[in-house]
Image 1 (cartoon, rainbow, N blue to C red):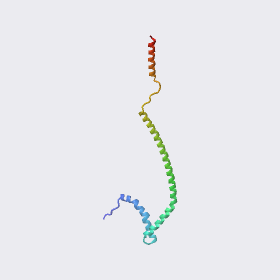
Image 2 (cartoon, one colour):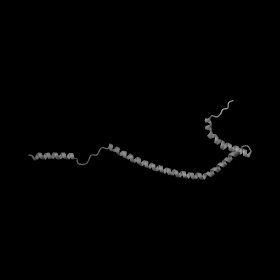
Image 3 (cartoon, helix red, strand yellow):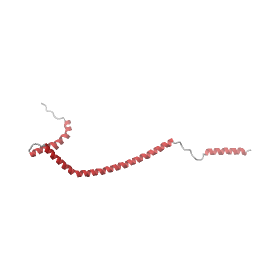
Image 4 (cartoon, rainbow, N blue to C red):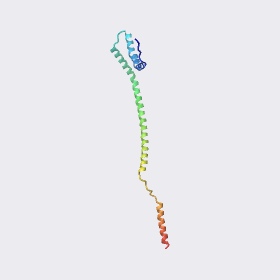
Length: 139
């Protein structure tokens, strides 16, 4: 009968799951069983591991508080920087928007007439008056 081996892809996919399982669970159980020379008691092992984890968490708690404080400070700095950049962006957009609106209004609004003297009309009136005076003065 031919021996079948595990395909390479399957072994590579299972390795990240199997290796920690063996090193973190199976080996400690086996070593504990050999050391105490008695059968494995799952409840007692679970109790010991729970106490061990609790001690580890108690030791890590001050470090977690410090990390939490630093993360809060950094978050506040990032928030403040984002707020400043947002204000600058809103200000820039409002300036460009108002300039664009003014340009559109200039295109829509009727052009103002010049309120100054119309030199052509004035010159025409003077010419008519001058011709009238010249014609009356010839008689």
